[in-house]
Amino acid sequence: MTFEERKTQVRSYLGKTVRIAVDRPVGYVHHKEKYDLIYPINYGCIPGVLGGDGEELDVYLLGVDKPCEEYAARVIGIIHRANDVEDKLVAAPEGMRFTRGEIAEAVNFQERYYISAVETEDGFGGEKVLFIDACARRDSRTRRLANALLDSLFRDAERVRLYDILPRCLDGETVEKRSALNEKGDRSDAMFGLAKQFADAEEIMIAAPYWDLSFPAVLKCYIENVCVNGMTFRYAENGVPQGLCRAKRAWYVATAGGYAGENLFGYGYIKTLFRDMFGIPETRLIIAEGLDIAGNDAEKILLEAIEKHTARG
Image (cartoon, rainbow, N blue to C red):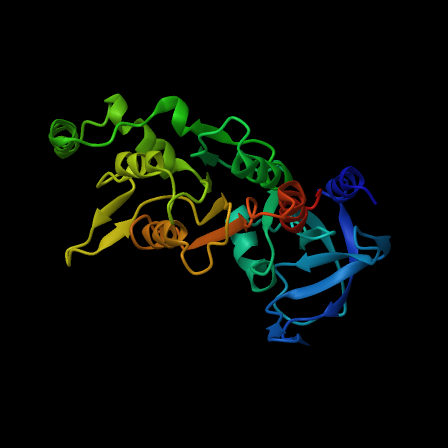
């Protein structure tokens, strides 16, 4: 089954009522090699319908709290997996509705091990995906890897190419102006535009090559512009920052000429910043390494990374 056929198949079931044969009911324990996967919801398949992996098409059943063996339910969503050969359907009893966030939370017990996105009957629901491009080169390998992931997961994204807009690093004058306007609650100035866009995004992806054990300086300038008290975070009474951003997940995509090993300081910084200041709990790392090592086939390494992290390859 091709990628296009796979997507056409799962989308054809949206809004339809299907009979689900439940083979992993609520409480079922799936013994994996390194862990036990406990199913908090019913999970099964549509008998006789083969999915992308050549096995029967799988379905998460929401809204039925007790274990069951069979259930007729309406398909309300799709779990698109970028790094697997199959997608999953999501169904619920007729008349029962779940938001994309509720679906994502319900299936996270298993989907946390995959790169996945939720589509509902509204498509991707107008999800605001923000792509922050910190790649200097026009033929950037990092951008190429990020674009492959974007194409596999989302239909569209709002793109910010940092080397095109060159966000200004904050100096004393700019800091004073921003602080004065912010204290008055006046955020109409263009200097607040990047922070508003960042705070409103529901998914965030950063493409940043591995430079000097970190990332390009232009990304740090961008971060200075989006760190606005009262917009992307606020301080609690005890002085600890609390995130105000809508996004619950972010992606950090990088490529390295050598091998970063444990020296991925840029990713570590972004992950901590997003979690502890912006309130974005999950940041995933996607990286292709060793591209410039003598004897390595850079194109092959990059294609293998794309194949590993996306369904298309």
